[in-house]
Image (tube, rainbow, N blue to C red; front, top):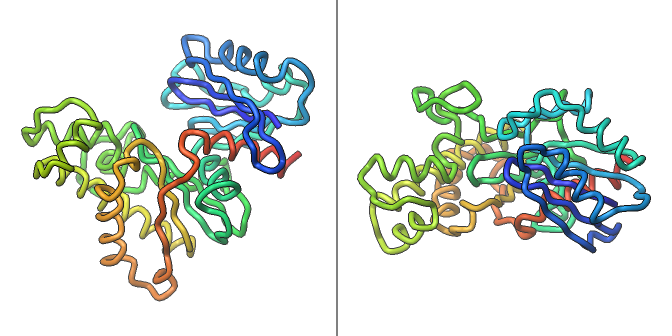
Length: 289
């Protein structure tokens, strides 16, 4: 199965077998003409016939219409991605948001195996997510269900790219962690330096991650209460800091997730790294073709 993972900076592709093994992999910069990059990836990986194509794409997506309008790809607005890839490959095409595909990939071949009700989260330059309920991807009415990065955790917080205010993304994303720390006097410039400062005991850097972990934990609490989750898997660049993020997440759950049916809720780091979206896109295609 051919899997594509489309983001604002790069377009990745892979061939994945039914057992969940990534056989081949290719990437291209998204560039000024993203579909040309899609064509290049497809040409490298699958110059002949493929049985099906699964696509993970940055959102918003419209899985009914087969169109995408990623915030981080301004040249694509209501872009007919499914029709264009179907014409390119001659194969059935399945589309989902990248957060949902991350969750589905981890459920199929990573940390989420065996879960009956799972949220996958990506905490990186943005915060995304997706739901796998009763072993199946749940995209909701338009394909955007599970986008927990826009759960509001600070009603009077800073403006978000979505047009709202105080979303978890405005507190916990890598960009905003650094921005907040610098506003408090921290002198570094990027997330890696912020993590190093926090590990070295810098109180501002440590507080940035505490705030971020608390925001993530509050979003998880709300989502788990609504969806009766048993597992949350967190990946993405910010999640690589380990306990700096996971300890405040778990402390927040201990404080707020007090309903009896949430007592067994587990939070685990993702296992598949940046390939999770490809695995999820392939799983999507295998289940729908």
